[in-house]
Image (tube, rainbow, N blue to C red; front, side, top):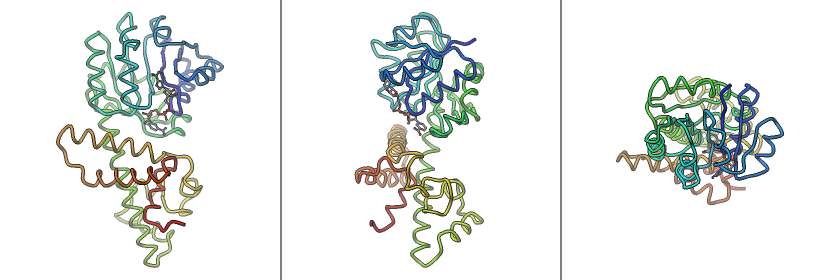
Length: 298
Ligand code: NAD
């Protein structure tokens, strides 16, 4: 059985690790947070106190789920990082959401040392991680490398897509979340205008969903309170995908667009709206709460 060494057991990494254990993989884990490690060892993983210790047993695969690019750089290419401690060619999978430039730079260093590295960011949130229904967007150098990561990702996800070469998983993630932010803001603007002009919110939502304005936010994740059951808008915008994480992803879009000299007009505005929302103390609210930017505060 494939032996996986996993780094990063936070909101996403911990449930992913549990699904790998359930699927029968031999799993060893490391996180700076000792409690997170203890929870996984109680469920059958073996633990390590450092990256050096984690890699001492020469695993077949390293899988990471870390907050941001700086953590990924430190964990892989830092003096005490993964590349410094691997003793044989290993398959490396980074599922953190980071900018494509960093993903490509780290993968290039790994490749130079004889390892295969893919970027495999996810969509689906913590609920998808727990249910094992995540979508993985995979940037892999070739079909063979993609085929090697597939069995592991299938234990944790439902849709595993080969997006292209290294870095394209992050490109797909950045492009998708850029569009998601813009469409959520657009829907919020349309809904609040319609209600201010005298329309019932539920009826307007119904009409939009039968018409050309419909989108994922209108069909399954409506931002207007009480239009839809079981969405953050119907429980005070608790849970779901935090506005500060959306702001992070818009920052990645911004940074990447700058890198290739591509204009980001609506994306720039979306980033500023989320920046202001986070500054006003709403970073923990679900990203659909951005509709409040169009509503009188109470
Ligand atoms: P998190 O902050 O809950 O977890 C990150 C974990 O990494 C923490 O347990 C932390 O201790 C650990 N860590 C940080 N630096 C480390 C290091 N040097 N060595 C070992 N461990 C280290 O974050 P999360 O919500 O699990 O998100 C992880 C990634 O997934 C992020 O890039 C995020 O953007 C992305 N993502 C999150 C969601 C979501 O809904 N939470 C959805 C899709 C994608």
